[in-house]
Image 1: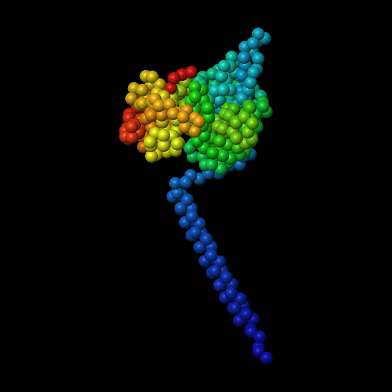
Image 2: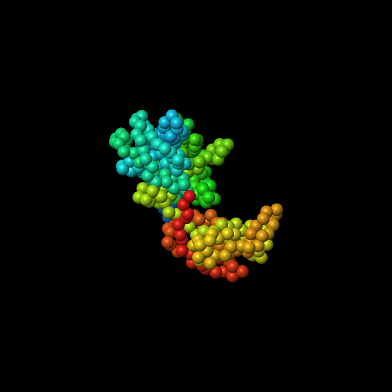
Length: 375
């Protein structure tokens, strides 16, 4: 019968086993940490933006609620000033400037601003841009302890799928908050005189009448948009004017009362395969000039409109005009590409190089931008 190991030997075996297990765990931990560091380095070196992840919705609401206001619009009637509609806005600076939508305060005879503590003060219109549906109003006086401007973020850094919050006064219900995600970027909204609001943000956060003019915020507590519109009858399809547009326009609205949009003066039809075939083109990217406004920058530069009426698929087109395929170094697929590039990067008086196809020949035409006609 074999003798049992001595207690001292038994403890030595146990110690060896424990040391082996510890070494294995340290090795596994080191491998995981090295792999994690490599992943972080790859993400930091990547050109893909990272979503804004910061404070909680509860904290964002608590930090911003005193900076979001209710705007009441009044009209002069035979009985005096009567409240007609309401919307939202948010404090832009410590001077009393408040940002909202143009359609919220348009045609107002008087404007009242209600702060979160119930204080009501009159406001005056400082500037408005119907082409971007933005307006700035100003209050004098009011609760000084509530003058907390909301920080503007960069809407160009938003990612589809990123969490956002809409704050405002839907149906007059003050300081309401809804949470959702960015559904898509770069949407178009209709503006007066057949122009387009470019770069609009589509969100599924609940936006209802009365939310207009309120802030759309990211998870860092920054304003990335101004809630502005919904598709009638839709559920979860709302839009906001991007904060980059706010940053670009509001200083000029405060200084001059209006914003000067760059303009070159054409209307066009985007290329489709059947249209390209009718014009004898071997490309399907670009936009065909169908009208040039007389004495516009495009007219002065010699851009040619079409003069051939053609029926394609039951639709009537005016073909034969210049086909815009590029602006500066940007490839153009549709007219909206031209508009977005010019709105983001150019001012009246700047020159752009339009790349066009005319009679099968690729040309470059310099156009000095003018000012979009006022309404």
